[in-house]
Image (cartoon, rainbow, N blue to C red; front, side):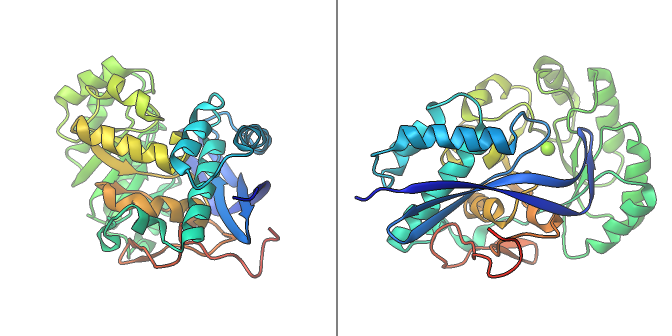
Length: 348
Ligand code: MG
């Protein structure tokens, strides 16, 4: 066993269009690329940062440095216990943990010459269709985006900002496809949330509603759930596996994201626990490059719903990686998490 080196590099990811949801707007995201080098192999990971959570490129770099110190002298191929150290070595900093955990798994799989999804034993052709998210915008632009989303059989629509009626009217003028609705905590009382749910029940096929109410309004969400015909999925209410039992009675399912969970290994624990509690599982993402999205795609055959479009929103994705065919991620035989290093473009 030889030593390893860990390096953090900020990456400014520019969005094709301004991205607006109930939490705010952005034109770019400052994510962090993590590389672990050992014996001529490089494992890649990414911290995808959301304004909803407190992490920045600086906190990620500091957290990764702290965790790297804790891992010195360890055999990284013992990825299970290495992953435990990553999860428990410091508090919070889940995107930083995710970046390191993804890089550890990518490195190990490259060292043994195996695609990560094969290590998991999944059928790569069973990846679910991914939705395409439509951010908040004027009704004209939403209508245009819906029309341009021809290849995606499911669209995810962001609500919760006060003009929900206009948005759904614009969407339904353009398509009768099934929709995932994401309120991003935007409905503030149980009565408001229930009124929205009842109205959405009359708006064509709605497959699910994500996070109707603020993250800590669990009892209120349970009250809405008892009265809803549409499944409610927890996103902001659940980050890691330890959050699941507390919210299991209030939701029909959970949205697992690598960046909330702290990486692939915790995401897998969340999927197992959710299944045990008979919850449905969605796999989502932040705005991420092909590094984070390719890693998530590897575990997507385990879930019911996928929303892995973060890289599709980017102007300058520095990596190649998982591609979609008929809106499903195609898992290749490329060792590791399935990314291709850039030869041109961003200098990383
Ligand atoms: Mg969400």
